[in-house]
Length: 197
Length: 197
Image 1 (cartoon, rainbow over the protein chains, first blue to last red):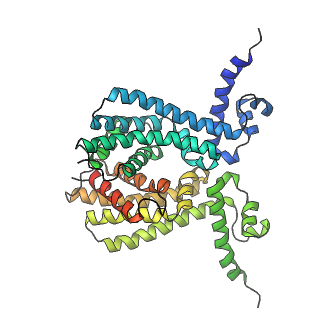
Image 2 (image 1 turned 60 degrees about the vertical axis):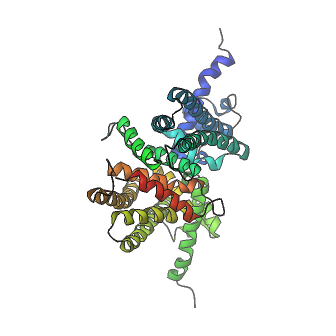
Image 3 (image 1 turned 90 degrees about the vertical axis):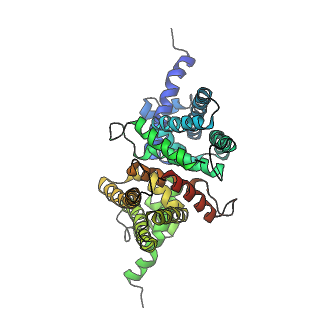
């Protein structure tokens, strides 16, 4: 029985995305051609257009899927962490580090290739990014209201904490001096103190 | 009197660097050709090679000059700030934000294009980056020794503080809700608390 377009697509689509992710992270979006992506997957360049209308759509979908996965993971974590602002902030801190260290190419592209998104795609990625930032800002505001935190500007503190945590990706290597769990604890110590009342 | 090669080079060299910086930041190193850089400057592609041997050298020199300028600025600031760890840390924090916000393209390239440096060039940029990090780590260690700071891992705290401060570049826009001086004060408040004894 011939494979259907559907089942074929189920296998090839993810392979195309993985190849595009790898190539964009290595060379940059503007330097990678659809032909190169096809070559990496082992299909004809023309066949790629059965799976994606263009390179812009590939980039957008990689960034959108990354943010969707992050927001879905946060929803699950937040449900576990309960309502206490301190417990929520610790959960956010440790989860951010773990989630991002496992996805170095996605994180690199999310920062580097914003400039190459079409305006409507940029707006959608910004919306998802703001949704993520809003959770942390709400945790900080709730902690201030409860008297647990002293944060003069919760939006700026949100940017500061996220940048600090994402920075782990630039230096941490598995098998080095510190385990990831030790790194999480060091960062949580700094975050906790930075927002302390 | 005909212009000498020297005086011509004095004018054209910096224009080539500025054009390369702008184009690398906009499109990425791998996507930009020497021909494009020449076109931006308004010279023939062949003339570019009077000023630089190749694109790799242009990239390396942009990144090296950025780090040299940063280290020279730090040496001047450190001389002014004196020996007290708290005063030194505040000076480092405010200066890092001011220096980097004025150089968005250099900062973007310094992070994004490390992957495109030849190994010997990468090693040299890493050496300069470590010299910068070493100053902050020394400030933190001196503050711990003086009993002013509690920092369980000064190297990790160095990475955390630098990532947090450089993150200002991703969101701050002049003319927005906050002045740069207000932003500096908000970040200093967080840094001070994060390392507090």
